[in-house]
Length: 122
Image 1: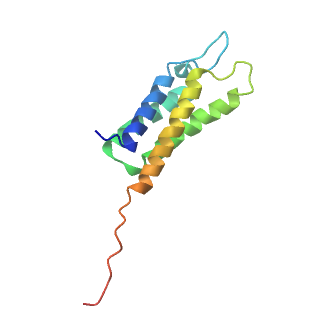
Image 2: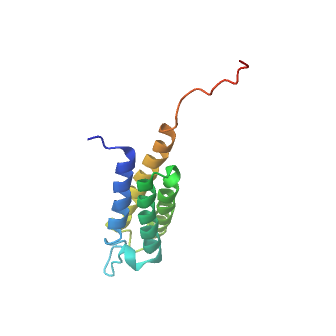
Image 3: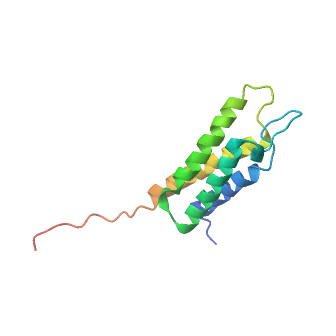
């Protein structure tokens, strides 16, 4: 059984979904990903990305990249705060980065490399 980049990217997008149930902030008032607006948006985007990968839409990396932008922004804003980023936020960021990179590479490696047909006159 050959595991392709697209299947691993789907698993990474599923890891983004799973990260929504983990704490996104540390401290006494731990907040899950589903409790914040960014988490709910990233959840929907990750689910849509899984479907786009399944139907074979080549630019599905844009969905993974959008999830990476959402989660990355939240990660960068909570780095300096008192309740720092939790394990779910780190997991979502790593999974979104992996999914984006895998889908982006897959988009260019699956391009057909045949030479263009000549328009000869005969």
